[in-house]
Image (tube, rainbow, N blue to C red; front, side, top):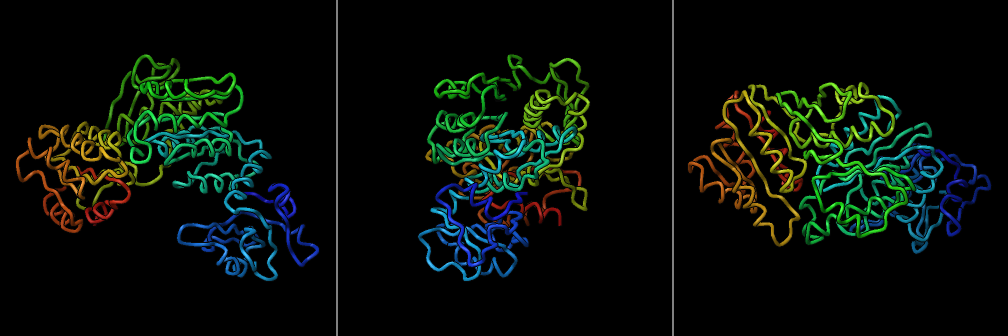
Length: 465
C-alpha cells in the first residue's frame, strides 16, 4: 500500500492542496495506507472523508483520528476541521482521492490489466490474476471495488514491488469507464462481452458497447486490447472513437474466426476441461462450470501469452484459481443435494448461460431452477424475463421456481409447456425456500440465480441448512 510522508502526499495532490498543521514537523509524518471508513482505519493511515447523498465523512474525522489515523483530507467548503489533526485542504475530497491514486500509479513500475464487460468481469479478473500469478507478483481488485471510488482505493493498495495489477472497471453510464481507464492507464484491457445490463441507464446494447469501449481511452501507445470477437458491437464501438496509436488486438470467443477459440469442451462435476486452437497447449482445466467460463478463460490465456507466461504456467494458474464468491459456486448440502449458487448478479445473458450449464450437467436426479428478478433492464424488462421462460423445456429441467414481480413473467412463459405443479411463482422468499426444501432429494441439482438485490443467497443458505 502507499507509504509516503504527508508532504509528499500534498505534492502528489497538486498546487491546490495545502498542508495545515500546528506542528512544524507535520510534513514529515509518515502515512501508510488510505481509508474512507472509520471501521477500516489502520494506524498511520490517511483518512479521506467522502460525501454521499445521505452521509458526510467529515463528521467522522475526529473518530478516525482517535482510532489512529495520522491525518485527513479536508474539503475547503467544510469549516472546523478537528483540532490538532494534521489536515490537507483540498477543493474536493473525491477528486483528491482519484488524483492521489493517479499520481501513485505513475510512480510505480506496475503493469496494469483493465477488465470490463456486461458479464464475466470478476470471473475473468480472477482467471487473469491466477494465470499471471503463476509467474509474477500480482494484485487484483478485491470484491467489487470497481467504480470511481473502489478503483482508486485498489491502486492505492498496491505494493511498490507489485509487478501486475488486474483491475475491474464497472459503470452505469457513459464517461465512467473513461475516467477509470485514465486513472489506471492499463497496458492491456479486456472486454468480456456486451449484454443487457444497464439497459435502464443506457437504453440500447449499442450504447452499452460504446460505454465499455471507453476502456481503451487511457491505454498507452502499443497497448494490447483483448475482446470478445463473437460480439460485432465491440468493433463497431471502437471504430467510432479514437484509438491509441499502435493498439494491438486479440479476439477470443466461441467462433473459429477468432484468434483464440475452444476446439473441444468437456464438463464434469468439478469444472470444465477444454482444448484450444493454439499449438503447444495440453488439455486445460478450470475449476469452474459452464461454457461461458471457458470463453472467459480464453481472455486470460491471451493475456498470459502476451506477457510471457508459458502454457505450463497458464495451466497451473487455472488449477490454483481462487474465485470471488457467489459466481456459480458448486455447493453440497449435508443431505448430498447439489446447489449451484449464482446469486451474485443476473442479466439475460448470464441467466441463459447458467441455465445452459444446468441442462448440460449429468449424473443428477431432477433439476430445479430458482430464478429471481433481473434488475435494471429498463422498459423492456418484461420482454427479457419472458424470453428466459420461453427457452425453458421440461425435457431438460424438471422444476421452475421464481421469485419476485418480474420472475412471474418467467413462470408465465414456462407454465405453457411444463406440468402445472412444476412451475411455481413466489413473492415470499421463506415460502419458496420451504416448498423447495420439501420437494428436493439428495440426488437432485438446484440452480439459484438472480440479481444481487433479490438476495437469493438466503435460499441457498436454507437449502444447505
